[in-house]
Image (cartoon, rainbow, N blue to C red; front, side, top):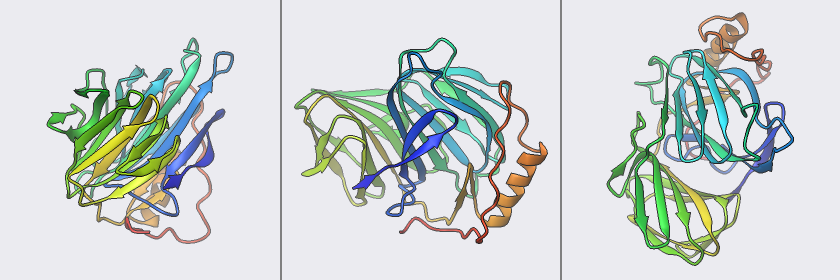
Length: 293
Protein backbone atom coordinates (compact mmCIF):
# COMPACT_ATOMS: atom_id res chain seq x y z
CA UNK A 1 0.00 0.00 0.00
CA UNK A 2 1.37 3.42 -0.99
CA UNK A 3 0.45 6.68 0.73
CA UNK A 4 0.92 10.06 -0.84
CA UNK A 5 3.41 12.78 0.05
CA UNK A 6 1.96 16.28 0.31
CA UNK A 7 3.36 18.70 -2.29
CA UNK A 8 2.39 22.30 -3.10
CA UNK A 9 1.23 22.58 -6.71
CA UNK A 10 1.34 26.07 -8.13
CA UNK A 11 0.44 28.93 -5.82
CA UNK A 12 -2.34 27.44 -3.72
CA UNK A 13 -3.18 23.77 -4.30
CA UNK A 14 -1.79 21.01 -2.10
CA UNK A 15 -1.66 17.58 -3.72
CA UNK A 16 -0.90 14.07 -2.49
CA UNK A 17 1.80 12.62 -4.74
CA UNK A 18 1.27 8.86 -4.98
CA UNK A 19 3.53 8.08 -7.92
CA UNK A 20 6.49 8.04 -8.19
CA UNK A 21 7.38 7.03 -4.63
CA UNK A 22 10.25 5.19 -3.00
CA UNK A 23 8.17 2.04 -3.30
CA UNK A 24 7.05 2.32 -6.93
CA UNK A 25 8.12 4.37 -9.95
CA UNK A 26 5.76 3.13 -12.68
CA UNK A 27 2.52 1.23 -13.22
CA UNK A 28 2.66 0.29 -16.88
CA UNK A 29 3.48 3.59 -18.57
CA UNK A 30 1.74 5.57 -15.80
CA UNK A 31 4.62 7.45 -14.21
CA UNK A 32 2.99 10.19 -12.10
CA UNK A 33 -0.17 10.43 -9.97
CA UNK A 34 -1.24 13.53 -8.03
CA UNK A 35 -4.52 13.45 -6.08
CA UNK A 36 -5.88 16.81 -4.93
CA UNK A 37 -8.91 17.80 -2.87
CA UNK A 38 -11.66 17.67 -1.98
CA UNK A 39 -11.07 21.34 -1.22
CA UNK A 40 -13.52 24.16 -0.52
CA UNK A 41 -12.48 27.02 -2.81
CA UNK A 42 -15.74 28.99 -2.72
CA UNK A 43 -13.94 32.09 -1.43
CA UNK A 44 -10.50 31.27 -2.80
CA UNK A 45 -8.90 31.38 -6.26
CA UNK A 46 -8.47 27.60 -6.41
CA UNK A 47 -5.94 26.05 -8.76
CA UNK A 48 -3.30 28.52 -9.95
CA UNK A 49 -0.62 26.74 -11.99
CA UNK A 50 1.21 29.20 -14.23
CA UNK A 51 2.59 28.28 -17.69
CA UNK A 52 5.17 25.48 -17.49
CA UNK A 53 6.77 23.06 -19.96
CA UNK A 54 6.59 19.31 -20.64
CA UNK A 55 8.43 16.82 -22.85
CA UNK A 56 8.15 13.07 -23.37
CA UNK A 57 4.79 12.45 -21.71
CA UNK A 58 1.01 12.73 -21.83
CA UNK A 59 -0.93 14.55 -19.10
CA UNK A 60 -4.30 13.13 -18.11
CA UNK A 61 -6.59 15.56 -16.27
CA UNK A 62 -9.53 13.95 -14.45
CA UNK A 63 -11.94 15.89 -12.24
CA UNK A 64 -14.29 14.54 -9.61
CA UNK A 65 -15.52 18.02 -8.70
CA UNK A 66 -14.95 21.55 -9.96
CA UNK A 67 -13.49 22.97 -13.18
CA UNK A 68 -10.01 23.63 -14.55
CA UNK A 69 -9.21 26.07 -17.36
CA UNK A 70 -6.48 24.66 -19.63
CA UNK A 71 -4.50 26.79 -22.08
CA UNK A 72 -1.41 25.70 -23.98
CA UNK A 73 1.20 26.77 -26.52
CA UNK A 74 -0.82 25.22 -29.36
CA UNK A 75 -3.55 27.78 -28.73
CA UNK A 76 -5.88 25.30 -27.01
CA UNK A 77 -8.35 26.97 -24.64
CA UNK A 78 -10.66 24.55 -22.84
CA UNK A 79 -12.43 24.16 -19.51
CA UNK A 80 -12.25 20.61 -18.16
CA UNK A 81 -15.19 19.44 -16.06
CA UNK A 82 -16.05 16.24 -14.15
CA UNK A 83 -16.51 13.24 -16.43
CA UNK A 84 -14.40 14.75 -19.21
CA UNK A 85 -10.92 13.66 -20.23
CA UNK A 86 -8.34 16.38 -20.76
CA UNK A 87 -5.52 14.67 -22.66
CA UNK A 88 -2.39 16.62 -23.58
CA UNK A 89 0.44 14.95 -25.49
CA UNK A 90 3.67 16.82 -24.90
CA UNK A 91 5.79 14.89 -27.38
CA UNK A 92 8.88 16.92 -28.25
CA UNK A 93 7.69 20.06 -26.38
CA UNK A 94 4.58 21.84 -25.12
CA UNK A 95 3.73 24.37 -22.42
CA UNK A 96 0.41 24.86 -20.63
CA UNK A 97 -1.30 26.51 -17.68
CA UNK A 98 -4.05 25.27 -15.35
CA UNK A 99 -6.32 27.64 -13.43
CA UNK A 100 -9.67 27.47 -11.73
CA UNK A 101 -11.95 29.79 -13.75
CA UNK A 102 -12.58 33.23 -12.16
CA UNK A 103 -16.17 32.11 -11.45
CA UNK A 104 -15.84 28.51 -10.36
CA UNK A 105 -17.65 25.77 -8.44
CA UNK A 106 -17.20 25.75 -4.67
CA UNK A 107 -15.32 22.42 -4.61
CA UNK A 108 -12.14 21.22 -6.33
CA UNK A 109 -11.25 17.54 -6.42
CA UNK A 110 -9.39 15.52 -9.01
CA UNK A 111 -6.30 13.74 -10.22
CA UNK A 112 -3.46 14.75 -12.50
CA UNK A 113 -1.69 11.81 -14.09
CA UNK A 114 1.20 11.40 -16.51
CA UNK A 115 1.90 8.66 -19.03
CA UNK A 116 5.50 8.18 -20.16
CA UNK A 117 5.76 8.08 -23.95
CA UNK A 118 7.82 5.22 -25.40
CA UNK A 119 10.91 5.91 -27.49
CA UNK A 120 8.99 5.70 -30.76
CA UNK A 121 6.53 8.42 -29.73
CA UNK A 122 8.29 10.70 -27.28
CA UNK A 123 9.38 13.22 -29.95
CA UNK A 124 6.05 13.40 -31.81
CA UNK A 125 4.24 16.67 -32.43
CA UNK A 126 2.35 17.96 -29.38
CA UNK A 127 -1.45 17.75 -29.22
CA UNK A 128 -4.41 18.44 -26.94
CA UNK A 129 -7.87 16.87 -26.93
CA UNK A 130 -10.91 17.26 -24.67
CA UNK A 131 -13.12 14.16 -24.72
CA UNK A 132 -16.55 14.79 -23.21
CA UNK A 133 -18.14 11.49 -24.32
CA UNK A 134 -16.41 8.50 -22.74
CA UNK A 135 -17.57 4.88 -22.72
CA UNK A 136 -19.29 3.64 -19.57
CA UNK A 137 -19.69 0.07 -18.33
CA UNK A 138 -22.41 -0.79 -15.82
CA UNK A 139 -23.01 -3.61 -13.40
CA UNK A 140 -25.39 -3.60 -10.43
CA UNK A 141 -23.90 -1.00 -8.09
CA UNK A 142 -21.04 -0.10 -10.46
CA UNK A 143 -20.51 2.53 -13.13
CA UNK A 144 -17.07 2.31 -14.79
CA UNK A 145 -15.93 5.17 -17.05
CA UNK A 146 -13.00 4.32 -19.35
CA UNK A 147 -10.58 7.25 -19.50
CA UNK A 148 -7.85 5.69 -21.63
CA UNK A 149 -7.33 2.35 -23.32
CA UNK A 150 -9.92 -0.40 -23.07
CA UNK A 151 -11.75 -2.24 -20.29
CA UNK A 152 -14.10 -5.18 -20.83
CA UNK A 153 -14.45 -4.29 -24.52
CA UNK A 154 -15.19 -0.58 -23.98
CA UNK A 155 -12.52 1.67 -25.52
CA UNK A 156 -11.76 5.32 -24.81
CA UNK A 157 -11.41 7.75 -27.75
CA UNK A 158 -8.18 9.08 -26.20
CA UNK A 159 -5.00 8.40 -28.18
CA UNK A 160 -2.47 6.16 -26.45
CA UNK A 161 1.03 5.10 -27.49
CA UNK A 162 1.54 1.97 -25.38
CA UNK A 163 -0.87 -0.71 -24.11
CA UNK A 164 -2.57 0.69 -21.01
CA UNK A 165 -5.89 1.41 -19.31
CA UNK A 166 -7.29 4.06 -16.99
CA UNK A 167 -10.84 3.90 -15.61
CA UNK A 168 -12.93 5.48 -12.87
CA UNK A 169 -15.00 2.98 -10.88
CA UNK A 170 -18.02 4.53 -9.14
CA UNK A 171 -19.47 2.06 -6.64
CA UNK A 172 -22.60 2.24 -4.52
CA UNK A 173 -22.40 1.49 -0.80
CA UNK A 174 -22.11 -2.27 -0.19
CA UNK A 175 -21.70 -2.94 -3.93
CA UNK A 176 -19.65 -5.91 -5.07
CA UNK A 177 -18.23 -6.00 -8.60
CA UNK A 178 -15.91 -8.19 -10.66
CA UNK A 179 -13.95 -6.74 -13.58
CA UNK A 180 -11.86 -8.57 -16.19
CA UNK A 181 -8.17 -7.67 -16.38
CA UNK A 182 -5.33 -8.31 -18.83
CA UNK A 183 -2.88 -10.79 -17.24
CA UNK A 184 0.07 -9.16 -19.06
CA UNK A 185 -0.73 -5.78 -17.49
CA UNK A 186 0.35 -4.55 -14.08
CA UNK A 187 -2.32 -2.63 -12.17
CA UNK A 188 -2.88 -0.24 -9.29
CA UNK A 189 -6.00 1.20 -7.63
CA UNK A 190 -6.36 4.66 -6.11
CA UNK A 191 -9.25 5.58 -3.78
CA UNK A 192 -10.02 9.32 -4.13
CA UNK A 193 -13.41 8.85 -2.43
CA UNK A 194 -14.47 6.15 0.00
CA UNK A 195 -12.78 2.81 0.68
CA UNK A 196 -12.95 -0.73 -0.64
CA UNK A 197 -11.88 -4.31 -0.20
CA UNK A 198 -9.89 -5.46 -3.22
CA UNK A 199 -9.43 -9.22 -3.52
CA UNK A 200 -9.53 -9.41 0.26
CA UNK A 201 -7.13 -6.49 0.94
CA UNK A 202 -8.24 -3.15 2.38
CA UNK A 203 -7.83 0.04 0.30
CA UNK A 204 -8.33 3.24 2.29
CA UNK A 205 -9.25 6.70 1.05
CA UNK A 206 -6.28 8.48 -0.53
CA UNK A 207 -4.19 5.30 -0.79
CA UNK A 208 -2.71 3.62 -3.86
CA UNK A 209 -2.70 -0.19 -3.95
CA UNK A 210 -0.26 -1.90 -6.31
CA UNK A 211 -1.72 -5.13 -7.71
CA UNK A 212 1.12 -6.44 -9.87
CA UNK A 213 0.66 -8.65 -12.95
CA UNK A 214 -0.90 -12.02 -13.71
CA UNK A 215 -4.50 -11.18 -12.74
CA UNK A 216 -7.37 -12.10 -15.05
CA UNK A 217 -10.01 -10.40 -12.93
CA UNK A 218 -10.46 -8.34 -9.81
CA UNK A 219 -13.19 -8.37 -7.18
CA UNK A 220 -14.01 -5.10 -5.43
CA UNK A 221 -16.39 -4.52 -2.52
CA UNK A 222 -17.25 -0.96 -1.49
CA UNK A 223 -17.87 -0.11 2.17
CA UNK A 224 -19.50 3.24 1.34
CA UNK A 225 -20.24 5.11 -1.87
CA UNK A 226 -16.78 5.14 -3.43
CA UNK A 227 -14.94 6.29 -6.51
CA UNK A 228 -11.73 4.50 -7.43
CA UNK A 229 -9.22 4.97 -10.23
CA UNK A 230 -7.93 1.82 -11.91
CA UNK A 231 -4.58 2.27 -13.68
CA UNK A 232 -2.77 -0.42 -15.62
CA UNK A 233 -0.63 -1.28 -18.59
CA UNK A 234 2.06 -3.53 -19.96
CA UNK A 235 5.20 -3.13 -17.83
CA UNK A 236 7.17 -0.20 -19.25
CA UNK A 237 10.67 -1.58 -19.73
CA UNK A 238 12.43 1.58 -20.93
CA UNK A 239 14.57 3.46 -18.42
CA UNK A 240 13.55 7.08 -17.96
CA UNK A 241 14.72 10.25 -16.24
CA UNK A 242 11.93 12.21 -14.52
CA UNK A 243 12.85 15.69 -13.34
CA UNK A 244 10.56 18.67 -12.77
CA UNK A 245 8.06 18.52 -15.67
CA UNK A 246 10.17 16.44 -18.03
CA UNK A 247 10.26 12.73 -18.87
CA UNK A 248 13.48 12.02 -20.76
CA UNK A 249 16.16 9.39 -21.25
CA UNK A 250 19.24 11.24 -19.98
CA UNK A 251 20.32 14.08 -17.77
CA UNK A 252 21.70 15.88 -20.82
CA UNK A 253 18.27 15.78 -22.48
CA UNK A 254 16.67 17.23 -19.35
CA UNK A 255 19.29 19.98 -19.12
CA UNK A 256 18.71 20.93 -22.77
CA UNK A 257 14.94 21.12 -22.22
CA UNK A 258 15.44 23.29 -19.15
CA UNK A 259 17.78 25.60 -21.04
CA UNK A 260 15.34 25.94 -23.93
CA UNK A 261 12.48 26.75 -21.54
CA UNK A 262 14.44 29.42 -19.69
CA UNK A 263 15.62 30.95 -22.98
CA UNK A 264 12.09 31.06 -24.43
CA UNK A 265 12.86 28.55 -27.16
CA UNK A 266 11.09 25.42 -28.41
CA UNK A 267 8.03 25.36 -26.13
CA UNK A 268 6.10 28.41 -27.29
CA UNK A 269 4.13 30.97 -25.26
CA UNK A 270 0.95 30.38 -23.27
CA UNK A 271 -1.64 33.12 -22.85
CA UNK A 272 -2.37 34.19 -19.30
CA UNK A 273 0.19 34.48 -16.56
CA UNK A 274 3.96 34.72 -16.34
CA UNK A 275 5.80 31.43 -17.02
CA UNK A 276 7.26 29.48 -14.13
CA UNK A 277 11.02 29.54 -13.77
CA UNK A 278 12.66 26.14 -13.83
CA UNK A 279 14.47 25.04 -10.69
CA UNK A 280 18.23 24.73 -10.77
CA UNK A 281 19.55 21.43 -12.03
CA UNK A 282 20.50 19.03 -9.21
CA UNK A 283 24.12 18.79 -8.16
CA UNK A 284 24.14 15.01 -8.57
CA UNK A 285 23.79 13.43 -12.04
CA UNK A 286 20.32 12.42 -13.21
CA UNK A 287 20.44 8.67 -13.82
CA UNK A 288 17.91 6.77 -15.99
CA UNK A 289 15.85 4.36 -13.89
CA UNK A 290 13.59 1.47 -14.75
CA UNK A 291 10.27 0.47 -13.25
CA UNK A 292 11.66 -1.70 -10.44
CA UNK A 293 12.25 -0.23 -7.02
